[in-house]
Amino acid sequence: MKIGLMLPGTADAAEIPTLAARAEELGFDFVGSGEHVLFGSPTSNAFVTLAAAAAATSRIRLLSAVTLLPLYPAALAAKMTATVERLSGGRFELGVGVGGENPAEFAACGVPVSARGRRTDAALATVRAYLAGEAVAVEGEPTHLDPLPTRPVPIWVGGRAEASMRRAGRAGDVWMPYLCSPDRVRRGLRVANDVAAEQGRPPVTGGLLAWSAIADTRAEARALAVGTLKRIYGQDMDRIVDACVPYGTPDEVLARFGEYAEAGAEQILFAPLCAEGGHAAAVEAVGGALRAREQ
Image 1 (cartoon, rainbow, N blue to C red):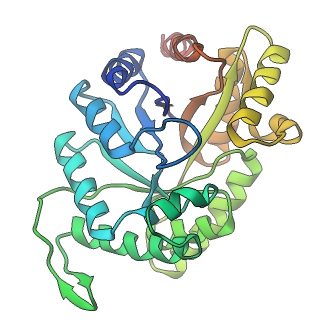
Image 2 (image 1 turned 180 degrees about the vertical axis):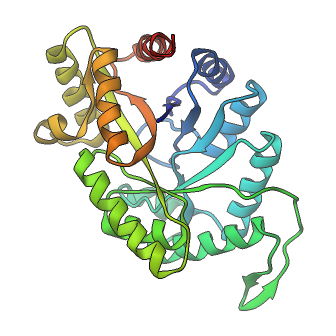
């Protein structure tokens, strides 16, 4: 099981190099960054954030979790992927999602929300072809874009719906759901790998974006999880927290991660649910627990 750390999307951009370097020191295997154009609070861009993280680190891998692929022209997404891959010395992994929960950001980018799935599928094909040095379709004609030598980049497909499972089977290397139970991970991977087998592709591995709450007691951690998720998503999450959110002491959260790993989520992205100003403490607590387990 590999454990990563989600960088806070609302952090001051100047703090990112320090946060990424500390994650590397604590022994996390990768860092992740999400993105939004409009989401009700200042949120960074994943490519830019991870480029900053790359400059401050040397070992830790870098995952966009997730890039809202339908908001990009496909060729631009491909070029930015290759650029960060080169900049990081081969440590970048591209996570993609279709978005849609905030239609305003689609309108701001001139992209119809209804086209997000179709645009994502087309962009994935372009990104894969570009990274492989193959021709891509431009206005219906096979075209070689200006080359930027790189290596294959692992592609993570984010989402909980069956469409994301099938997309991972068709075009991804990792399926990464969020807010789901271990059983949901197991069943989703089965769907993704059935599709991969039909396509003659290698098996898809499992990931998980794990919203998680750390506190001195399980009761405190549960209350923190419910309250923070309500603030993020604008709805009551009380009914799903016990099944879908690791919470408790650091050791209890890591034990819960183990249950997801047994279900097939080999790479877990720890996303702290915390009160304002509590991110660093949660990171240090889990990092300390990771170190203790290694000794």
